Image 1: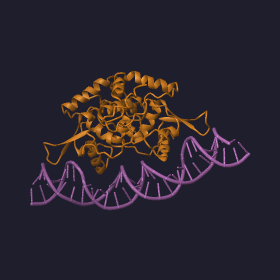
Image 2 (image 1 turned 90 degrees about the vertical axis):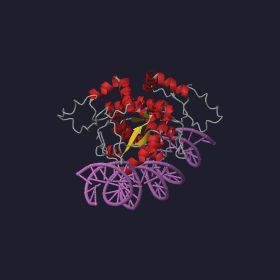
Image 3 (image 1 turned 180 degrees about the horizontal axis):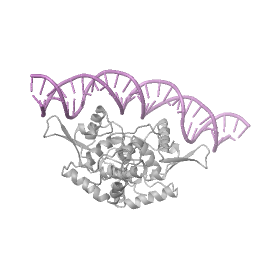
Image 4 (image 1 turned 180 degrees about the vertical axis):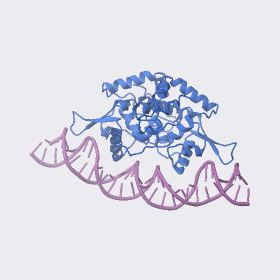
Amino acid sequence: MAGKEGKTPRSGCPVSVSLEIFGDRWSLLIVRDMMVRGYRTFREFQNAGEGIATNILADRLRKLGEAGILTTEPAEEDGRSIHYRLTEKGIALAPVLLELLIWAAHHEETGAPCAVIEQMEQNRAAVLSETYRRWKERDPRPILPPFQRQDKPTTEKSRKGNDTR
Amino acid sequence: MAGKEGKTPRSGCPVSVSLEIFGDRWSLLIVRDMMVRGYRTFREFQNAGEGIATNILADRLRKLGEAGILTTEPAEEDGRSIHYRLTEKGIALAPVLLELLIWAAHHEETGAPCAVIEQMEQNRAAVLSETYRRWKERDPRPILPPFQRQDKPTTEKSRKGNDTR
DNA sequence: TGAATCACTTGCAACATGCAAGCGAAATGC
DNA sequence: GCATTTCGCTTGCATGTTGCAAGTGATTCA
């Protein structure tokens, strides 16, 4: 019951095993939302700005749960709602996401301000331990704000004072 | 011409942008094969052991090329063959793959021997600089051997001396 | 008590993937 | 120098996955 065997036993390479779990467009985004934005409910993921369909979202949450990356617990303040929460295994993905973030900020057009990325790059350990601390203490404050798409870099120097907090 | 605009402009989050490129089952495996196993030709990827279909492989190689993660050059020794090679942008994915490897080795059943992983974990910088060196000098020696799937941990102590070599 | 909101589920069309077979060009064998 | 093999793909087709819109039952709010 634990393992869902007979699914896709491709190879024993750790990278391959990982991709069997979240080798798709959405799973890591959900993990990111939980980890750095403090999202917990279905609604929050749905409105996270990427436009995931509700059936896909439900499917991914179920699969991530089966993979032991997140768990669910009833929301105390609202009987209709459920809180999704990363497990130890899930929060341990933080270094992967951090490196992914840094890579993309350097090599792709993203909405992440260079200064923020540079600071994270030079303080990897601090960023990770702060991420871990907030997870452990159930501190729901986001570590990073949602990044806007920087459509045109023309004359836009507005959104920027949005530093580390 | 550079950017293939009009495709999927989901959000400006670096993680999301990354997943638009290799958010699927195969792309990162190809990058892994190039990076740590020194694979260069279509045939090598095809026989890498994960069982990718040739049409998918061709498609992913094309997309990774369009994304600037790899380039092609004619193989000098064989006019039929083509050598795929990571770009700077591609080799810069090394930290992401390393963290992914470490994560999976800790949290999933993989074929990676613990000793090897532990050593990589404690020498991240050395592993990365060696990876980079081999890429730069076109040294095709693999950094890691293909890991076997450890099917049943029952009484099987055979395949194990497969250490760093 | 009725409307709104919660986390989903369902139906269906469009797209992506997996599999086997085939194709032109270059290399190899005889 | 000609047949065979090997190279990197492409094609056709069945199946699986995704995206979209609408709907459902349970809970909460007004």
